[in-house]
Amino acid sequence: MKTYTGIPASAGIAIGRAFLYLEDDFPEIPRYAIRKAQADSEWERFEKAVAEAVKEVRALHEQASREMSREQADIFEAHLLMLEDTEFHDQLKNRLKNKLQNIEWIVWDLSHELTQKLGASPDPLFRERAADISDVSRRLINKLLSVTRFSLADLKEDVILVVHDLLPSDALVMNKARVKGLAMDAGSRTSHTAILARAFNIPAVLGLSVLSREIKNGEKIVLNGSSGTVVTNPDRGVLVRHEGEEKQFRKRADRLLGLRELPAETLDGHRIAVKANIEFPEEAEQVSRYGAEGIGLYRSEFLFLAPGKSAEEETQLRAYRHVLKTMGKLPVTIRTVDVGGDKILPDLQALDEKNPLLGWRAIRFSLANPELFKAQLRAILRASIDGNVRIMFPMISGIEELERARALFDDAREECRKKSYPFAEDIEVGTMIEIPSAAMTADILAEKSDFFSLGTNDLIQYTLAADRGNEKVNYLGQPCHPAVLRFLERTINAAHEKGIKAAMCGELAGDPAVTALLVGLGLDEFSMAASSIPVVKQIIRGVSFAGCKALAEKALEGRSVDGVRSVIEEWMAKNFPGGRYGV
Ligand code: PEP
Ligand code: MG
Image 1 (cartoon, rainbow, N blue to C red):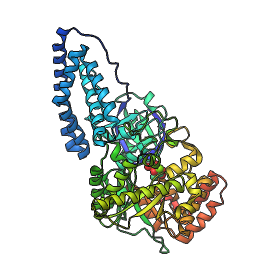
Image 2 (tube, rainbow, N blue to C red; image 1 turned 45 degrees about the vertical axis):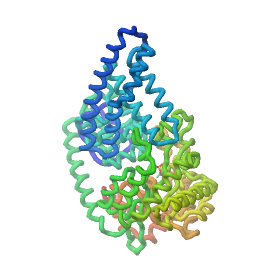
Image 3 (tube, rainbow, N blue to C red; image 1 turned 90 degrees about the horizontal axis):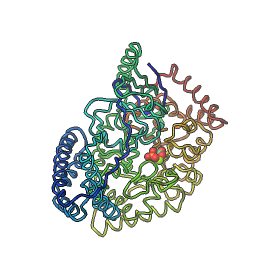
């Protein structure tokens, strides 16, 4: 038995077998000349590989239709069409006859040429096709070389997934019904894979450093996503204790769900809006179960990141409509795409940026691709008649970017008018405050914003210069750092001085340890993983606004992380003796 301690990233307990998933490199593809007489037998090998691949993809398609989203099932359907596409087969056959080289090389050669050509096209449909070709060719080459390449979508048994690192795009394809827990060497609470684990309600521990190197496939493990521990080969005592904790966890969560209908109002009548963050349209159905009063952050980029999909205007329109209709009158804040950083669009972005977190991300990418950006804005505008939508821009660093984004929004409106698409005229446009330069100039940005939303995941990483996905510097990313508190205070005050609301959609908004502090700083709206809403509501309902303001004043005088933290901890201990405020 051995215990590993990491970062608690998604609450809950999982007990099961470890499934070690380590990405291997794509195998070397052999290249050799063949004689003319061999062309037929090479082609027979190809046809056999196609038949095997079709069988495999058909099974995946059926499973996806049963257990996953429509989008994922569609991907496999596209792959099936591609595998059986006669034009693709003809091109391969001609090339085989002309070049007289082994068939796996011919498949690679043609697919490489096609993906390069289609991938560079401005038309999203062509780019989607490039991704399909690349996936299908990989599968075919694996068949020809008899290499079975495991995909996380193919998981058939319940497992606890152990990885060194997992990109959000990999997490998207995994068979979530089978992943009962996630343990990862890299990452922190605010890395996007952690955010996805919470969205999928999968207990997760990140930042485990060496676990994937030390663990063996199939080893029994206990993963505690609430305390951040992973125990390998647990003894009976550990197993029994965790089974008990798991039951307690569920009971507490159910009890807190009882708060769902009650308003998030302090004892002295100060009303706060409590909303949910979502990454996928399907999540909208679940958020009201937790008492969300709207969606404060819809991370729209996950529509673009699903492998093989680049979301054209109509696809986006369908997704936004679905969310808006599901939420009815409740407000939904759609954030325009925030790709880049750890969320790379392989067809459109370089994979080798030296500093991706300081690079071509979010609004920078959108402003450099005005046609893509306007297509997204038009999709939001067209969906706006189906509900109560707001828009916000990620990673604004200063007024110029905000003005340019707003100008493109005006253009998109004009384009909708020309096409006679009806849309809501009064859509609010907000600015995310997640870069220190934005927080410092919040008073200026407030003049052109209808609301602010504090993205503390990034604001903290950029303020402390500590990569949010790097477990080695995770200890630095402290919300209680006086610099972070000052930025929060400054931003909220700037919003209020200009008569606009200040929201927060970073993970901090769902951290019960600082709820009272944030209330005291004057935050108007909290948006978080839906499952955190009940406990945050419980705290808001148990404190007075006046008391929270006094706490915030004292915390702002703190000179160090520890100093600030102890002020908050003392206050919480006094107001919630025994730490009894929920999960
Ligand atoms: C943030 O940075 O706090 C935020 C909400 O955006 P994301 O986590 O998607 O970067
Ligand atoms: Mg951010």
